[in-house]
Each structure stands twice: as structure tokens, then as C-alpha cells.
Image (tube, rainbow, N blue to C red; front, side, top):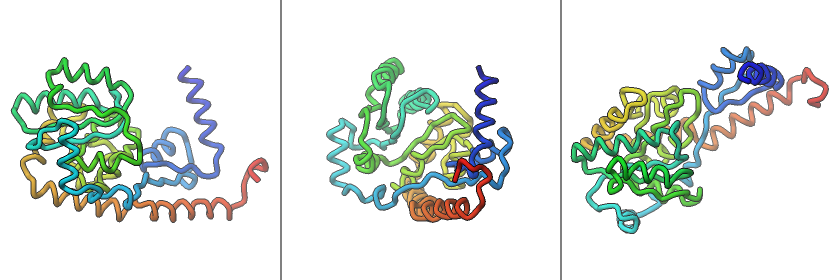
Length: 263
């Protein structure tokens, strides 16, 4: 089926006057692999509402209370993940990294928020011997996301796909959370030089090493979080993306359409 689906997708990619992509990497793929004229492909990175995702959404007292309610020890550094739970999202790698950190007696706890497969990954955490180091919350409503992310000291995005975006990273950045990820094109596009990158793709030990680098530098961790929020405000705000999208619409409307059915 691959050949026929690819031919169909090639045809679809030729139909629009403009294709808007969520990453530069996706734009390059369309131009290189789907023969799209670069003038028709407009990268528009994912964006984040900086008024909604902000680091002061909870007070320090509220953070301590909510951590206690979830059974997270007060003296542990909290690593947060919020998103889909799936192998391609790196969920098993995250749990394996937790095992490595437990073996070296690192004082960290993972708050894993999302779905599906919660029961499956909870069993995996038990089999790896890290059930006491990982708290699963299940599905988190969007309106509750900032308050849940505020419980973290560090955020992690262990996705191993090299072609997809990673919009959760922007939420982390807006929350002023230093962020660990593999060095994929999408992660690099969002985080730039401010990302804390695991040195080996798909390696849970490399993830654990990246966590330890941040765990041992608390002052840098805080400074890095502030810089990431500033980067999100500068490059990925709703307002900036809205202006860019309006400009794309205007350019399409002001150009003659080559196909009569688009009138």
C-alpha cells in the first residue's frame, strides 16, 4: 500500500495554493520529498499562550501542597512530562532513565501526565522497579495543564520521532521549565542553544545524564528557565503567529487562483 498512498500524498501536496507547516523540518520535507515549490510552503511554528502558561500560576505553598497530595516526597527534584504516552513519544525511555537514576541514588521523582496506556506504563514502571519514583496522573484537562506543569523543576520531552513537531516543548518553555530532549530538528527549532540535549538518540542513560546535569546546577536551572520563557515570548507567542498567519491569508487572497473551483 505504501507506493499508492505515497502517490496519493504527492498529488494532494500539489493541490493547495499554500501549505502551512508547524516546523521548518516539515517544510523541508515537503520541498525535498514531495516536490513542492518553496514559494507555496510557509513554515508557521507552533505557538503558546504566554498568559495562560506562566510560571507563577501557583504559589510555592500551593506547589508543596499539591505535590504532597500526589505523594511526591518534599525533598525530591520533580521531572514533569505532559503529553501522549506512547513508545514513539519516548515513554519507555523515560521509565528506563528513572531506573538508571534510582540505581545511582539520584533524588528525583517523575510526574508523568497524560494518556493512553496508563495501566501499561504503570506496569512497566513496576517491572523496572521505579513505581516509587514515578507518579502517573492520567489524562489532564487542558485548562489544568499549567497548574500541573508548575509542580515540576525540570521538564522532559523524550520523543524519538525526527519528523514530527513537539508542541509540548513550547508549554514547558512558557512555564520557565528547563527542558530535556533528544536533539531532533523540532526540538532544536524550539529550544535552540538553550535546550538540554541527551547526547545519544534513543538512549535512556543519556536522558538520565542530562537530568543529572541540570539537577547538579540549581542556579543555572533557574536562569535557563527564564531564558526559555523569554525565547518563547520572542519567537513563539500567539500574537506573533497570528500576525504571520494573517499575512499568509492576505497573500493567498491577493493572488489569482489557478483553479476555478477555489473561487
